[in-house]
Structures are given as C-alpha cells and as structure tokens.
Image 1 (spheres, helix red, strand yellow):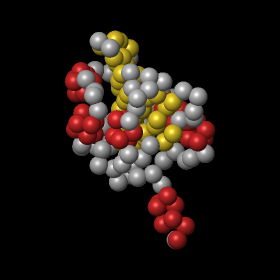
Image 2 (cartoon, helix red, strand yellow):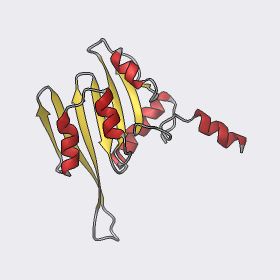
Image 3 (tube, one colour):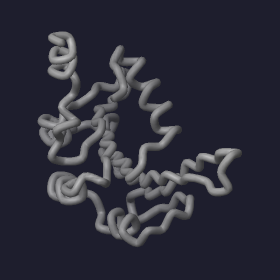
Image 4 (cartoon, helix red, strand yellow):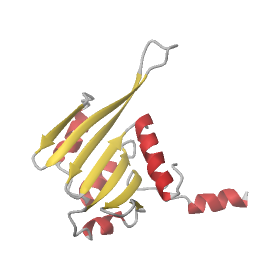
Length: 157
C-alpha cells in the first residue's frame, strides 16, 4: 500500500491538472529533452531566449479548460482551435502565416469489426512552441512518447 502512495506522489502532476496538459518538454539543441511540470511550463516558455530551443505541449482536449489555459498563456493563433471546433479530420499539413498546422489521423482496423476507429491529432508549430492536442489517445503518439520517456529514464502514464 505505501508503495502505491509513494508511486503516486512521484508521478508527474498531470493527472490532477487544471490545464489538460498531458506532457510538456523543453527541447534544446545538443541537450536531451527535459520534461517540464505543469507548474513551471509558462515560466520556462517565457525564459526561452534562444532560437535553438522550443517547448512542446501535448494536451487532452477532453479537459474543459485546455483551450482557455493554452490561449491565455501561450501565443497560439485562433485558427488552431477554430479548426479543431470545425470537426475537420482531413489529414493535412499547411502553412498559416509563420506557423504550421497539421492534422494527423490514427486509424485502427480490427478484422472482426466492419468499422474502423479513428483518433485525430492536431498539431501547431510556431518558432518556440509546438502544441499537439487530441480527444482520444493515439497509438503512434504513445510509441513516440514511450521512446522519449525511455530516453529520459521515465515512465509514460
């Protein structure tokens, strides 16, 4: 029992998150990616003074305040959430001014079912910020997140 409590205390604070943030990382040239706790991500972003560094935020859009938190703390263009709200799931990548926007789909086919399950990832890239957002977990994201966590000696939750 005490091990369970200890493990939960050491687990990143994303479960009780008020922002919908699943993962946050700081990437800097010639350094391994650094996980960033939700309480410090805003300050770390403001402290970026280098073109060779960026913050990556991965959000769960099922969280009621994810959009409000992101738009009130980071310079994310309005079109990002407009595209998500419009419900467009067409896979694509496009330039929006100085930013990139992409929609990626993860389709899971099961031979026993006649329908496929689709999970969509929306991606926003600006010079110092990368945002990925989803409603349903994605298989390819889990593989990438697991590889990133393994590089850091962490666990993916």
